[in-house]
Image (cartoon, rainbow, N blue to C red; front, side):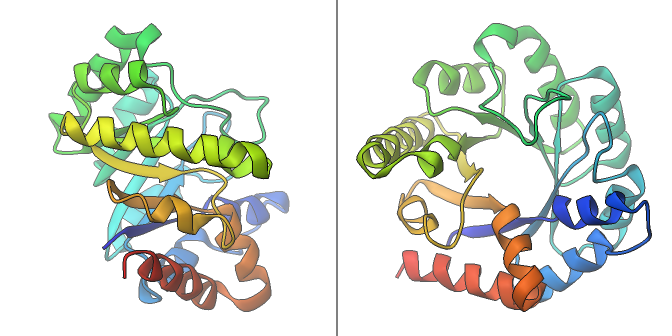
Length: 240
């Protein structure tokens, strides 16, 4: 069965817009778990635009499922993760000016830096994944630096028009097959929603999807519990 990780960053985005106490991303995360989420994902960005340290620390104390911390490959973030010890950590590229993560981590060009960061966290018992584009060289580099898993960037597939989408889907499927053949666990994420998720969920090598914006957007209309249940039902349908 495919796992659903719910990213609650944008609950914090609404809170930070007013520098208020609500809405609380931790409260949203706990409701998401009760509705069927298999894990909670948060991205602690360098500029702290949404998730704050206190959110991560409260999640680590209160979450019933696993906590997946998305983070840049920096000394400060690695030291923070070593102290907090999330269940999982996902290294992602990060630029201050971007609205959301744009493209995958270039592991090939930063192999030594990434390998050192992966080792530090995995020595602390943290499963480390790398958010990468579905490119064979990046997958092979992820294996070489010792990562436990990769998260394939699905954003290009999600943003493609109908003519190009099948090509992008095929690239993701091929990448997933390669990754499993070299014993990497395969996750996917970025841009997935209730309309485009099923073809990705149908890829048998993918065991986890991390989805945030579309679930939180749906939650504004129907509530977080219903939004998570609807996505979970879609993923269950994919593996029947």
